[in-house]
Amino acid sequence: MLLAVLDVGSNSAHLQIVDAHHRRPPAPVFRLKAPTHLAESVTPDGALSPDGVERVVAAVTRTVEAYRRRPAADLIPLATATIRDATNNAEIRRRVREATGVELHSFSGEDEARLTYLAVRRWLPRPESLLLLDIGGMSMELAAGAGDRPDLAVSLPLGAGFLTRRYLPEHPAPRAAVDRLRRHVRTAVTPLAGRLGGPHRVFGTSKTFKQLARVTGEDTVLSRRQLRRWLPRLAAMTPVERAALPGVAAARARQLLAGAVIALTVMEELDLPALEVCPWALREGLLLRRYHELRG
Image (tube, rainbow, N blue to C red; front, top):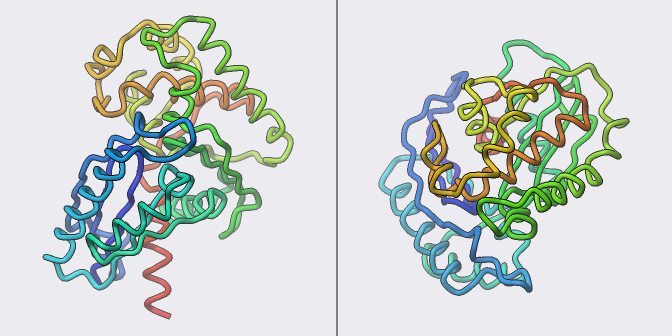
């Protein structure tokens, strides 16, 4: 059975088609990313700018056309927080529907955390107590538990793109701006420290964590100690210089510093010496859930 998920976010519309039939992991069949580059397209009133809306429509059109050329049984079209929380989200959905016939759907941040938790649970070879962290463009999700459903699922307004615009508009970034962002993240995360339970095996599931692991010298592990050493270096760089680092995409280089500040501060506040990078996240959670729904 071929299933497809289309994840429309702040950096790209990402189409992934997999063979989900009795596979662990589902075998990739086709993948296409069409850029959206929405990080700088959010206006002060929370809307996407007209050029940002045009990029969303063009990216979804391109990926939907690619999907329709393949024999996938189903398409799951997801709009993540950048579109979900835009004040003109109804217009964006209407424009996409008129151009492609596809209705973009969204989940709450807490539901996204639960779906990502499902993906990590299924990725592990055996059940374990786990904590996951996922830093997106507009929000950060956390989930923790030992069963099939998390005991805790939380979404915080700590997205790397969002906080770059608010706290780190200058590059290189002044030390005072980085310190202000660290205080903001600390205030948001500290109340969670007593609610997580544990001990947990800790995972980071987003592109931000993958890039930070590469930058600090590991592909699959992110160390708090190494990240602390790298933070001043990232703050002193321009986006162009960050884009030259191993594993850093040019489209994400501007917000990499905010991602590093968020990751380090959360790891400090939750006393996490390190985390593992899990390749499965929200898209895989959606595919797994849809596969089980279709099978009844």
